[in-house]
Image (cartoon, rainbow, N blue to C red; front, side, top):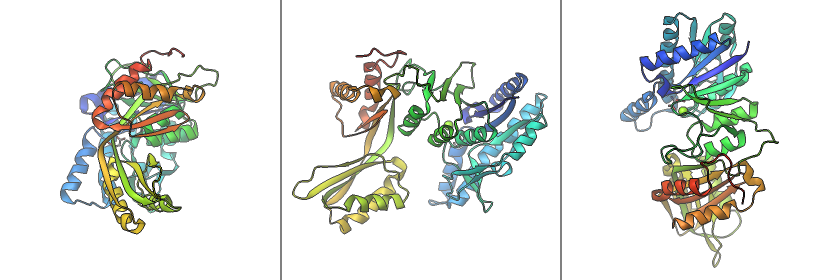
Length: 410
Ligand code: ASP
Ligand code: MG
């Protein structure tokens, strides 16, 4: 019998009516002849509410206590869902991360899974039960509860699917799948049918919120096929997996954006070996995630270095840089929160020149100034002003014909 792992996000279990609906879907999957393991998120809003309460009581709550607190959200959902399934006449049993043996490292609030045991899940399946597992949480080798970072239930589901050798990992959410652009920005946006792991990785890393980046990494490393679907209808959703080499690849599959980026600049640093090493080593040691980096051409042995960080790392990043200005004999530093990143992602870009040129032309036509640029073999990102990002997304979506399944080759 094949195993299906289904993950339901917070909006899919928003209240008892939604939980009943999810219970019906799970039962239908079992009745179709599958063994079902379900991973659930906290009821939508719960994790945010808990975070808010914590900060009301303490501006700097201990991360261990934060994990103890946040893990409770998922525990509510698994118990309620199990009761709902039993109420509809089927056997279900719920488990916490610790009970199932989702073992993580000790980096509280952003722990990484190091091992999945899953013996209790296998036992429940053998007994013919539906197994329900709390997403987002794990346990350390010293029995402390950890969480996997916001959106971490996606990673729980992927890790369990890998461990159990599931046929498919279905991620149920409140949208119908993965889109060629953010549906809140582009009206009538096209949904993608298939996305390769590499494309999905770039998309998740450049602002697509539909899946946690780590879940995609885990899926690629372990060959887990993921389907992103809506829990509100029966549409097919988007399949994420290996795309056969023989398939014609879209040149550009999607345009993504991320308004939650900030830029930090160090002015007037002496241009000699070791400066960049010093700056980025200190940032790395503080676990600050640096994205794009630009160093200007130096004039009279003096240069500027700019880089971008996620919004949540700005304050700490700025502190590191301010601390370095004196040591490096730099002229000063500045930061700009009003920037955003817009990116094009597509597996076919590799073999197709001219995409960057066309992207810059489209932005130029919109009179949008490009501040920084970075590329990978299947992605081009531009940093622009935050106020212009939605206009940029729409212009690129239209300019590259992303509304059509196959774009005209030029
Ligand atoms: N409840 C957690 C969050 O809101 C984890 C998840 O939903 O995946 O981030
Ligand atoms: Mg999510």
